[in-house]
Length: 344
Ligand code: UD1
Image (cartoon, rainbow, N blue to C red; front, side):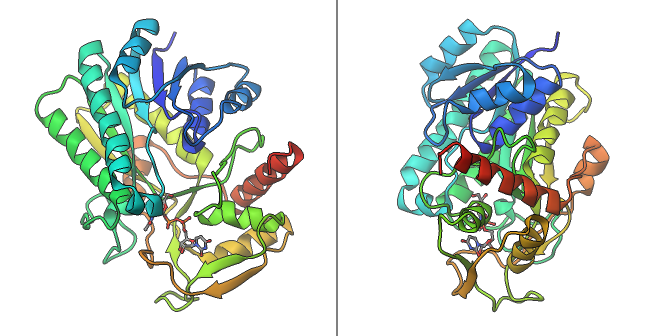
């Protein structure tokens, strides 16, 4: 029997896909989530895919007593994957204290309880946002960290520093920090996917909502960047590929496969795609048109960033495998499923 894994934020977008992969790999999972940006029905989706309903505690990770009761109720947790965080860049500019409190208090509570309850390792969700606007692409893990341009981005940088300081101070556990590029798509079963609150700020949910007619047209933020077609370039990574990397990272810590106490990996495909290229790929893959128009640049956007994923490829033996056309089809199937269920 494999040890139990605690997944914070496990009913969220990346969290739910990771719970599926953990359960498929034989790990018992307990989720803690305050449902601030997700829905309890996600558990049904996970159960339909895997045949197993993960244990679930509705609580906030900033509440240390709730965390303690969870550990009392579920002894034997050996690994934590921490997805519980606020993640909207724009909102973080309006409500910085909320972001610092949620994201940093959650992390510090988890680090405290890990030492107390003999948890062997924590996987932390970081972001390519730490590289800011890179001088050189693709970025490696050694690329310079740039000053954060939002409280959200700053919480990711500070969190990486907190983990490093705590482990260097001799904490009795390990950490794997994963820097995600742009996670997109949904589980191919269309049982789980991304469910944004309100008007989506990210490209793919806005695009699929436009394709299905909820939004009139997609605004392409700028076509005057220094890129081949003038629109911004990102590294779009399939959410299931991303989820699988977490299982490998957990295994690596629990089985002491590395002598390092802290490791950092970029999780991307290694391919940069522009906004216009992505719209095109979606239209070709699904046969569905996306009405769109070019508008001005969005404040704070990065012009281009994509990953050098060699470190993860070689050390973790992990590679993003899903062709982007398949990812676009899964994103579309999920949007259609939401419509079928009358959700949107
Ligand atoms: C942003 C954050 C990133 C964070 C991620 C999670 C920045 C610089 N990056 O990523 O740190 O982890 O959100 O939410 O803030 N676009 C359009 N029209 C739209 C929406 C987006 O053209 O309606 C374009 C954007 O200009 C961008 C690309 O699509 O070029 C991707 O945007 P988005 O999905 O918001 O992700 P990032 O900005 O890359």
